[in-house]
Length: 115
Length: 114
Image (cartoon, rainbow over all chains, first blue to last red):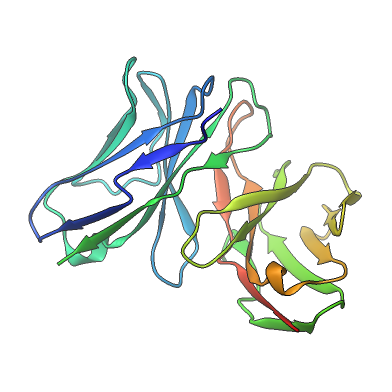
């Protein structure tokens, strides 16, 4: 059973370009979470999604960032017009339905570098 | 006040000793508490979760929770060099049940000296 998959693992963009980060949850998991980790800082919650729905996006910057989790395919975190401050590791986690307070499984992360 | 606070360390302990990692949280309504281990350049890995006051043991790891003091700790017995990592305390601060909005502390870096 494959774990949470993220791609690309490393992404380099120039300022002003768009970045698309993909996350495929574990099989049978319908809940997806995105986190951002800046160098030497903790994990910051960004958004929680279920299939076709955004449940909680309170951690998402108001501009340039968006997320989706379509009925088919991976969850996408999209950053438009990237700036150097967007350079970070972006982690996706998934959990099964009705997990209550149980485990979130993390993917390996995407390291975004903005030149 | 930060929602989840940890001493950033580094905490250095000799091999074979007990490492004690501490965490405090601000939301009295929190119900679920987690400890993750994160090696440098890697993703967080869940090692313990605890819901009830008291101790929970799993191998060399013991999680301790005191809701009255809003305090959770992780003890690592017989520390090994392979335990050297950053340990993240996390608390479920979701406004209602059914899903996890997990708030992470900034982590404590543990160094186990051979």
